[in-house]
Image (spheres, rainbow, N blue to C red):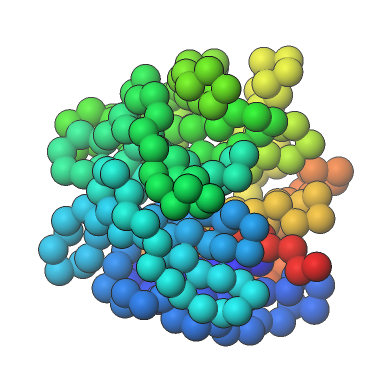
Length: 284
């Protein structure tokens, strides 16, 4: 598991690599831009893409893309996005990186674009039905599911619906309403189920697209706003975040086992953090 950057009273730029079996950490090379925050992170092969964000001193949306190669522990500059954005979502699907929604100033954007590493170029895709910021996205099957987030002027409303993008027809649709509308949450897919974790409460939910049915799962150990989440060995690992109830940044890692429907604290981040990237890279 790679944990990239984040925020702990100021922007973080470190790269930390965790082995959950031995519970050991190794540090990689720092991100080149030390003042950047509220970016989005996704992984494609051995490359981790850090897209957009803003610099603390200007709060101006960036179109910047930084690429970290896990094999060589090296950073390089990627091709800039078409639309500058922060607090957006990004995922990898069909060999491309998708950047979705987020803020550029004022209301959240509807713009979607994807990067083809073979053509080394970003291409526009269909606009979202509702622009959202601080939402969450994950891939399930051959579709992208975007859950929750803020919308409206300066993002003053929480969006309760799940938007789904189909790349084969380049179309967005709304498929369901979440039982607990949230922002600053995370989503992962596991065994063809969509899991929503984190946010303002300890509530966690699971959605079956096949049956169009929601069910609650066990509540989390902590409230984790803007946490990270990743699937490793058929379990969900949720990292860090900010606890509004405690008024503190969190350093713990908790793991959900779907077979047992239970959460347990299984590790500690090198530093408390929220808004960090959290991806799983399998070593071959």
